[in-house]
Length: 292
Image (cartoon, rainbow, N blue to C red; front, side, top):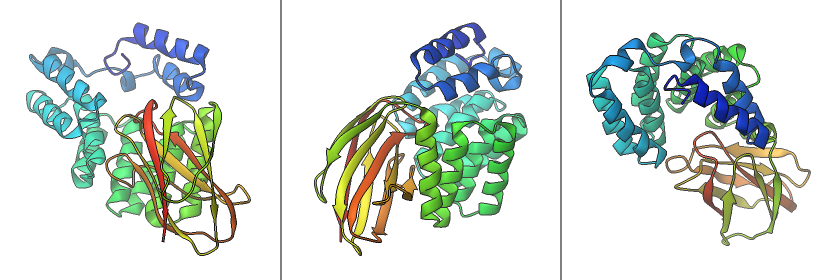
């Protein structure tokens, strides 16, 4: 509703989300935007170009079903009909990121910045695309611009966490993604203990943080994954002292999370936190741990 410019319907849903506490920080931020500027409106060109609405409906359906290659095809058709359609560039860029096509994603977000230079989401997304391409100077510049515009948004944690993970700063990535989980303000759920080679299936809901414990020994080289075709998983590894050691969002296949070949620093009980980012907060997630 927000992206389509239907302020009344969007406001009603965000207000209800706040009442239900799922999740308050995200809903409050978007509710504030509704009285703002171009960030929540379609361009005049988008509203009048014949044929756009039908193709955009197909694109949105594919995107929401995580059929990202199909979504790219539909959004490309929208852009052919309407070269200034900022919504199509935004969601095609996000689809390219999910497909690990980061050069294409960066190009779409470059164009989005040209079309809507005050659209903060464009800078968060472009920061991730450029970080994946190894251009950390541009990525940090975009992240700083976005966080300066909206300092209390959860996307800041996602963006800085992703940049840190790609730069190899595992502890900082863990701190950022742990802060994201804290910001959701949802329920914290203990799922008990597991062991290497024994997967755990998680039923994710908005704002929730799942805790999975496992015993590890100093020198164990552990790979942790959280995979889903429905939700957008995020993971954080806590040491025996409950301090973040590593974290990840989207380093695995598509939007799966992956902490690869992490060497445990000591003997003890470790905790893997599992939550979600903005690409999907509901659905089944399979969590796996292996050691070498």
